[in-house]
Amino acid sequence: AATAPLRQYMFVRNAPVKLMPVAKLSASLKSIDEAEVPPFLEQHGFFAQSAKSWGVDGGQRPVLSFDVDGHRELGNHTNYLIVGKIITNEASSTRRWAVERRLAHVRALLHDPVKQELGSAYNHHFE
Image (cartoon, rainbow, N blue to C red):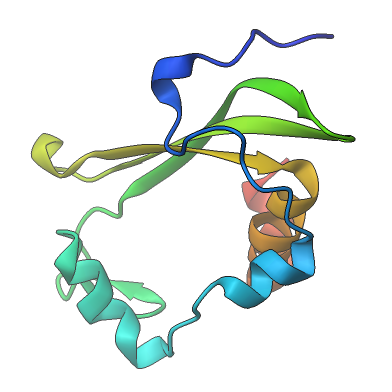
C-alpha cells in the first residue's frame, strides 16, 4: 500500500538527503554519558532525576510519539518522513520535529537500541 507523498513544508532538511550507510550515520552521532542526560533534558524543558528516572516527585512522564507522514524514493532507497512529538503535562513544553530517514536507519538507531534497553518488557510496550 502506498503512502501519501511527502509534504514539502514538513522537511527539516533541504532535499536531497545524503544517502549515508547506517554505520557511517551511527558513527557521526554523538552519544552522551548517563550523567549528562538530566542536564541535556533540562536545556529542553524536561526534568529527570537520572538517565532512567523522571522527576524527583515521580511526576507525569513525557509522552513520545512517532508517525510516518509519507515516503519517497531516492536512488535505490525508500526514505520515510518521520514526524516526532514529545508532550509533557505543560502544553507549552510540547516539541515537534520531522526528519527523513531510511528504514535501515530507523531500525538500527531507534528500534534496536530501544528493544535492547527494554529487554523482556519490550513486548508489553509494543504489542
